[in-house]
Image (cartoon, rainbow, N blue to C red; front, side, top):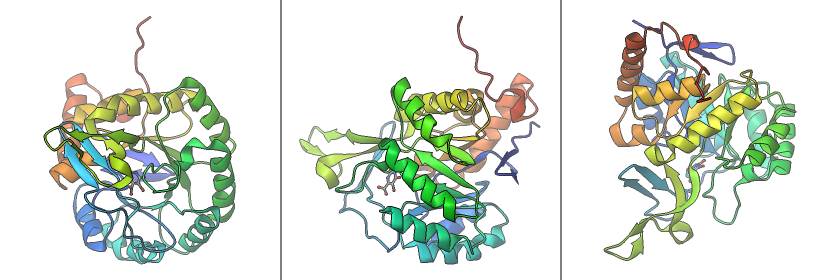
Length: 310
Ligand code: RRO
């Protein structure tokens, strides 16, 4: 049987498949479900300084090929997630807090507080499109530069960044120019594709309420965009920065495509929400089977080795 083991920030993981920040990872009960599942790590909901209720409902909708959300960062506040790190250690897998402070000062306080926790590594998330009244921070690279300087100056944990999707080569290059200045241990890409609009034609109405119906698109719709982002950052970093691929991973073959594009691991978001915690084991099994069929023994046999038509 093929091995799908991987390593991020020097931490060995039994498999390369785990949950994405966002879906069903706000409360300790939800995080324990992930702990008990075959998810290889426990990623937690992005947290802010204070607890937030999030945006008004309806704020999430399953779609034919994915999901749309405008949750608005509902979370229990960073102090709870520090407590949860301790409570989740018993599952023996890496615990990944996601930090999404609303200001630079908030981020500094939160990063400092996690220093005394047993979090394994931290995903910094400046990529949410859904905070009412705020643009997506990850599109303002000068601001990202400042945030990273502040966060990395404070954190004693390995820190990676969760990026919003980019669509133009020049934007990938601008993002990489900033990221490469910092000691970023991994890149998770992509966050949801922001400000999509889904319409119910019968009701002649939007399907979610916040922001006039505009929200982040996830699931199968966004896989090609996510693969492009993985590939571009793999190329720009010359394969040296581990990339965690996120976006429309529903099957083992999806995961295979991400590794082929250069990813070191994949996170599962919408598929976890729609299919429940058994989804991790199924994707892992399907990935192993697909590798067996191709004669690959480890992820390194094909990671990044995407062929381009000459
Ligand atoms: O909570 C959200 O609305 C949210 C966040 Br923080 C994020 O990073 N990505 C997303 O699609 N939704």
